[in-house]
Length: 115
Image (cartoon, rainbow, N blue to C red; front, side, top):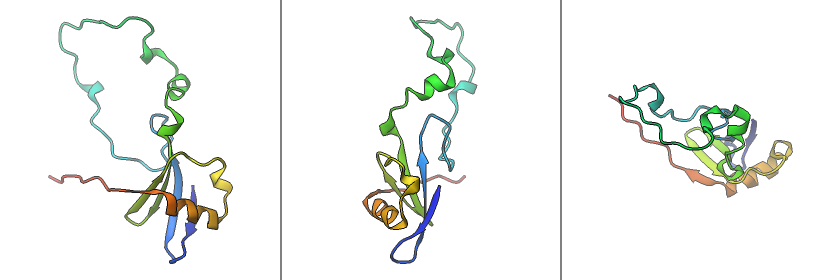
């Protein structure tokens, strides 16, 4: 994670996001976990071949393509996303990070209904 200040004096935070690997530096919105629901009776197994649930976490992480990862930028409520993650971005200068931030696509905030 890196923090830098842009030309207007706004402080930005940058971090990597790699969904599916458990490496989010900041938590994203959590979805309902269907695994907690009871299975209907009777359960009929139709799968053939290797059960992907039995793979190790390392093997499952390798299934996530590199393009699924992005470099996230945030300043207050403004977020931006850059795909793919530049190599060795942590070692870039603040000037180089500013350029990446300008090139990153804006991200719309998710609307959450409050009961």
